Image 1: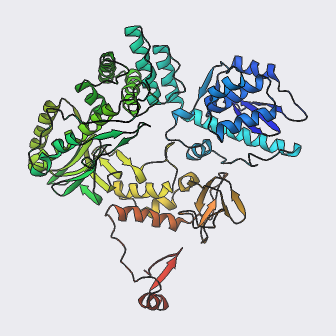
Image 2: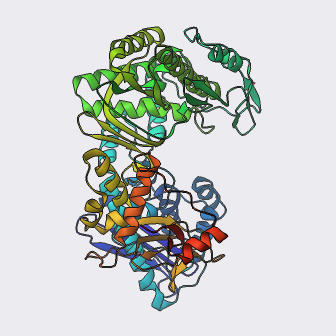
Image 3: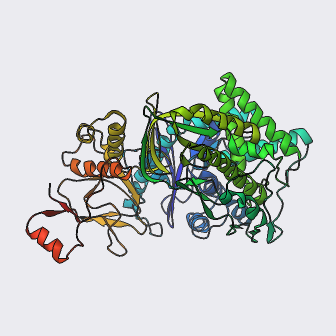
Length: 619
């Protein structure tokens, strides 16, 4: 279901996911009353799926079925979107009951906070279309069909999103049946909150009530007894953090003290410490397994949940019973994982991991700023203990991030490495999981390709495949770089051999809209690079170029046949830049400053050329 609303036109459309059969209901000057019985018949027969329906479509439809006029509905729409009012407050103020129907809202299941259009683009929906008529316009009779077709396209995108999210929804159905709470429309963190709330009530017979912020407060970090360092640089770190004051303002925001925001150097590597997880500071490097060295990744199992359990922490509003409830969830999850019960393991993983996210939400009964800081700082100090021990034994740590470290270990020290990990596990009461790599290529800690010894790969950041949480951006260039690193496949072979236009696509949101060659993009644009095109997509507001759009040809409708004007060489250059950024290809030489005397001489002699505004030495 999807709704479109203007000052003089109201439209609600329904579409069956299989087959695409659809039905529309309208209100306008020629049809002032909506078909209430027809809508209620659909609501009573089907499960309704929306994107942001909880906060928008369902309240508007409820008001419409309560007899509201089109102008009343438009005013309510503006109150939600423009003024940010909550639907429950509007229902109370306008005196109507919210519909109680079988409803799934997909929005909270998606990664990030993007629009339906962007999620559709990430899933390569056939047509990317923004609202064709401004929301404050009046709709003439001949424009109504245009709005209906736009709404139907939104329903097709919602169907694409529904199909993509089917595993998550099926898992939520399973959890809903187990806990007697409808979890189909909830994020992982919201599920954790609902499940723990239900379990606490089952054990105590009492509901947890979210408390109110009592104003500004402060607290200090409690250093666990097991945290100890031996090197001069690290010895004072725990005590410095213990003496620091964490301040929480009246809105619940935590201020990071200077003592925590620091860079620690161990061996040849710097590590950034802060309120979040630990991050190493490597750049442009690569490591290979050789006759003399191995590459090992040690990730801590259920790191944050285990820290919470080990330190006996609980949100004050939940009470000490939280410890028993939470430990039983984590223990059952590990049992299910080891026994091969994937459904139960996935269900309980969502619950265990989602809890931590709610400790920083003032809207949750699990809000506990000290518990949040106690968890993240303990995680960082614990990993630094292992890193310090590895380094003092001649085993370099080449990367670290939140819950794990990667080692470039001399083969003769492998047994020593395993001994250090084993002792660390016993000392801290954590467990780790080992992954073996044959190669690791890092642009930095958040952008890398790791090739495992079984030839599977692990990627992150700019090397990660397109997903619902990431805009597509020339993925064919990424794939070509990975194929080259993994199997030695020439970049040109991968790029020229691909005939799937989706792999060449880039998507961006353009605030204020954009334009190219007379085509207007109101908010989002999808393009591929066109051979011979040297002009960018520009912002409507100031005429500036949209980043990386030079040479981009709009592709709002995916073509059925692969275009014959794709600029393959552009994608080859992008792929080579990725390899330069991990140190596999040499950096281009530094040429004289543009328009300097030296530059002009090279240009006039034909020694350098400009390609799409970038100048380079002629090969």
